[in-house]
Length: 213
Image (tube, rainbow, N blue to C red):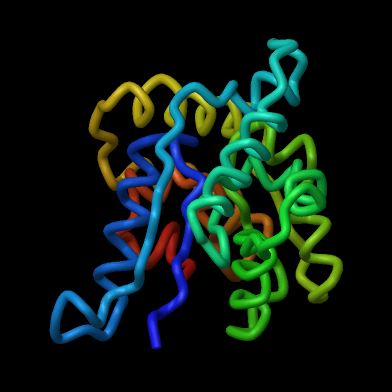
């Protein structure tokens, strides 16, 4: 029996998509090529910026492109889709309603895992678009997890790191993660989530931030 084909709605951003695929390979218990997850990724870098649309800086909506890409992956035989972009989950319901196959809700799964690990106050480092749409907060309510975001000056710095450094291909020193998370630790958070796939690309090897898991 052939294993299910997983489609990846990629390009949001491209580096994060490549990292996501790498993590699938690394976390799969495989002893040969055939043991690995069958994936088909569409690294569509033409998708309009999600945060710019949410904040009103751009009138170009990414929704239709995300739906069209999902339908293309469906037509290629994908049976389940992954969307490795936290901010794009602000449009999750519209995307899922236009597709026949299920899309994994990455934010929902992250909050579920945090709750099962005993986290009750989760600090979220993410884009301004993710913060404004409260993607994590809405999922936190389902699980009894209070999701907190950084103070405005720190949030601005998070945005600069994502858009001006990581997306531009610049290296970010790991000590920066502790600096970003300190305020969330002081606010009583008992866990930190890298709520942007670009931050995972920059700090994916970190297991703690400001002393928090």
